[in-house]
Image (cartoon, rainbow, N blue to C red; front, side, top):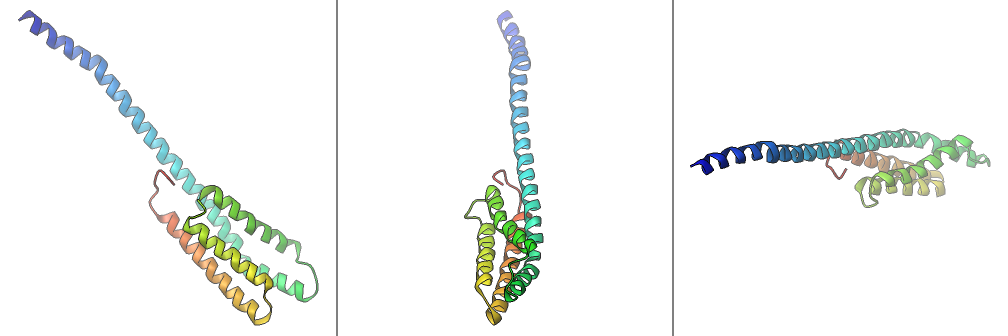
Length: 159
């Protein structure tokens, strides 16, 4: 009987003093890692949101800049520096988006559509210019809608 009475308390002490703290430490580390991953995903989402906001501002100035560029071309002048700077930012924005999203992401496809319409506008004149401008505005709206859907979707650890 003395062996049984000795084994039970020793087992209890071992479980409470060794196994319990080990299990608690493991669970704490796991919870901390999961929280860190959620925090990182939220930071990446916020960074993407800021970049998409910047894209919205740049693209929002698109129609005006395109008209200014077309007027300058019609007058036989070079594009104004502000238009050249805007165009460079629009094209560089794609690289920045690619740092945050894979090339096959729907947002990237919609942004590529915007860039294609800009190329069409640069070659268009007269009525074609107005049609291309409308196509740009539609592509811009699709990009913004796809971006909005991406931003309101639940955050996952792979975001």
